[in-house]
Amino acid sequence: MIAYASRTGNVRYILSQLQLPGIEIGEDTMIGEPFLLLTYTDGLGDVPPIVQRFMDRNGKYCRGVAVSGNRNFGHYNFCRAGDTLAAQWNIPLVRKMELRGFPSDYEAIRRFYREQIEERSADRHEVVFATQQ
Ligand SMILES: Cc1cc2nc3c(=O)[nH]c(=O)nc-3n(C[C@H](O)[C@H](O)[C@H](O)COP(=O)(O)O)c2cc1C
Image (cartoon, rainbow, N blue to C red; front, side, top):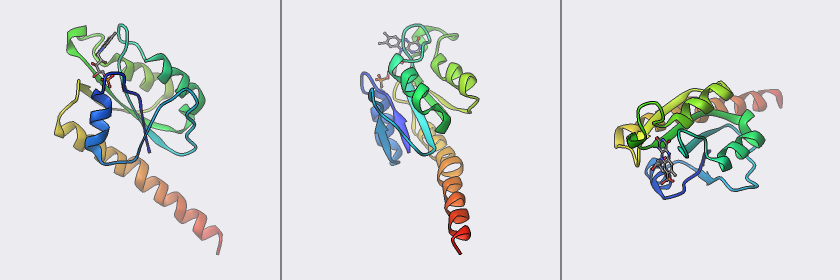
């Protein structure tokens, strides 16, 4: 699963290009399975408050973060929400993207998702199956 936040549509567009299951973050969103976080950057390099609150509830299931930003905010603040979340939750920063990103970004995210979320949850199901024998 990909949990995403989008204010002006860029992240929603990225999600639409990934062809992976996504859920838009709302005030009450709960996810009881491993997910990739996809977010924009707010303020001056800030994590959007709705994403911060979502991570307070669900962060233990987060396996990585990919982030959209705008280079006009300067090198230090470009996509800095991703650096903050990666450090805070000890998760990989999968990709920083300018605005809607590029096909190479979507491919990198898909690869991470396949390897770190899909394949690992397949392993987990195998274990469950084995213990039921
Ligand atoms: C008020 C505001 C503050 C922003 N601050 C930053 C910032 O500090 N760093 C950055 O990289 N992008 C910043 N951005 C750019 C957005 O993160 C970027 O446009 C992103 O693609 C928006 O995604 P969305 O269209 O899904 O909401 C800011 C945008 C707005 C409107």
